[in-house]
Image (cartoon, rainbow, N blue to C red):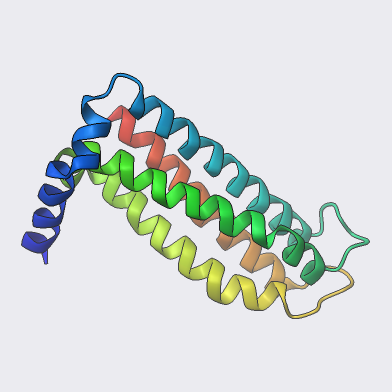
Length: 160
């Protein structure tokens, strides 16, 4: 598995977009702006729904309705984040292969996406109207921790 992953990193590093982003003066910061804006939008959408699950704010709106309202923004920002993230990754993919912070970010990202599209989505669509349930609060806390892990590990990439 490790050899396959390293081969993928070498392919991405040698690709035309890897070269383009790496060798351009303005392209890396331009792509990173989109990456960070998408992360901000995604973070806002995750925060809004999870705060509602925790019982803070938006009390008049059912969780399912709020989650449906922000879902297009969540999906759109996640798509922009993934595409821009791949371009950023491709510019230094061999370096990222050895980065424990990058690996941790990818683990958190995979877990956060799986959780969001399965358990979190199921709980938010369950039709809860009144006070937040214990299950809803637990799901919100797990969701917030997973997405915070993505952001914190992502920030750690620049430090390590």
